[in-house]
Length: 193
Image (tube, rainbow, N blue to C red):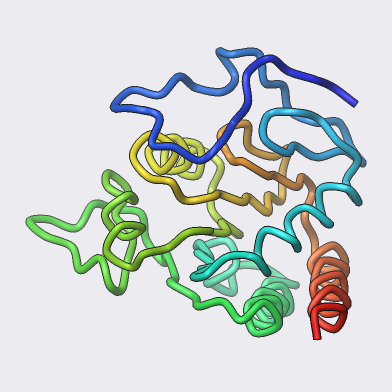
């Protein structure tokens, strides 16, 4: 669909990686998604995400407050879908219930720090992380830090418009899209046997 000159790929890209938006990466329209800075059809992105998850040695889901707290109707069902998706993918889950910095020290085995998500990635040898239910303002910062300092492949399953700084990003992710992604992963796993 679109071929952007700048590719959003796993780093490390350096101490101050450029924001993908400043490099010309645009958010996708409804029915589209982002893969490494290029706009693709949503179904193509789901296939890519499934392939990346299944190829990863240590994929980890990072669910945020939007799916961890039952703050509105439908959230509990979405949280169950995230758990089912992680189980299908054979991925671990490290929840992000709160973004406030934990000082003077965090435990990178059990949480991600807003100022240092790369520590959790390094400490746990994570090669693919999936953000879901993470507020956009925090996801944008954390994805950029992860890309800047690690070689972790990042996926954002966003309930809004998506994230330019993720290597793969779906927009408008709801319960149906999570179930669809789960079915794609199941089918691909079956094909690998």
